[in-house]
Image (tube, rainbow, N blue to C red):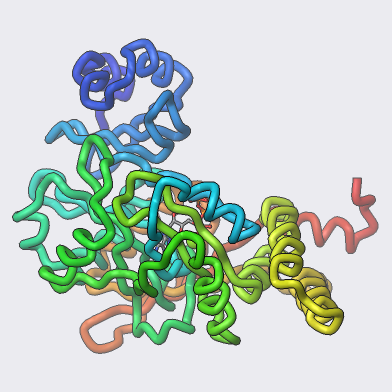
Length: 388
Ligand code: ATP
Ligand code: MG
């Protein structure tokens, strides 16, 4: 039964939360008032931080029974000019660890009571991801380490958020890139974390190696260039001890792939995706000291990534089609589909679910995510409306 939210909020032990998260009590009461700290209805009762509050990251989830916090996954800064940025950022390190940046969606997994749950970036429990991790990850890890949170990327074609086929993953798989303490969010060092994952047969993102800070830019440039046409996203460069925060660096091809996606649904995502990605291309071109031919190729690819998908969207709309993104899920329990439908409704995502198809001991469900703003804008402009 749904409990009264204000009653529940009144019962929150502010002092206890304040000491658990090491932030002043008035920050918590203020966040509750502003609804930055909000109740999320579901099988497990939790409050989530919608945005950062003092030193607490946005996406932090606070469970009441048992009383535990899973800290939001910290933002990772991006370098545009590798050499000077690495020297500056990692000046106190001798070496950096370079790991593959996989392109999927961020998930934090932990044991809450007797349940292994998976949280997405915003601090919601995703029922679909939760089913997947319960089949993918060995339970004894969480029983041996109930105070640890696995942070990783969910990657593969059966993804409701970021479907990718180029990793040759059959359905969806979990790759760990961080192991953090529950409540404090303190990270484990890179090698200790990778060894721990190996012990439990849990996959980690690929490690390219450790490189001297002054030489890492050369190794990373080679890595990125070696991706060729594979669409691999990039790398995350880390202090092996995880004292300094990591930084990310990505390839032009994956940059263009993001733009293609964003401009297919241009009025929903185009603006947010545009400026930063154009800047990345310009700085990479200069750092790589490109000749005229390479610059021309880069310009063409960038332009095509923006205009071609948008032109195709407009043509589709003109032909009377509804602009939608097709994704698919594969589940073992049909109940998960019903729960996932509720979950998308909670997030305000407009989606049309197809009928489940039985494949072996699983069900495949196709979903059309409707990007309404792009549909509306295109239709009105085609009908003669002014842009503004
Ligand atoms: P951010 O808020 O961190 O900038 P974003 O949504 O813009 O996030 P990305 O550009 O995808 O995300 O970069 C950060 C994300 O990369 C992380 O949140 C994580 O999900 C993902 N990631 C993939 N591989 C790794 C890795 N090896 N180490 C750390 N993060 C990784
Ligand atoms: Mg990502």
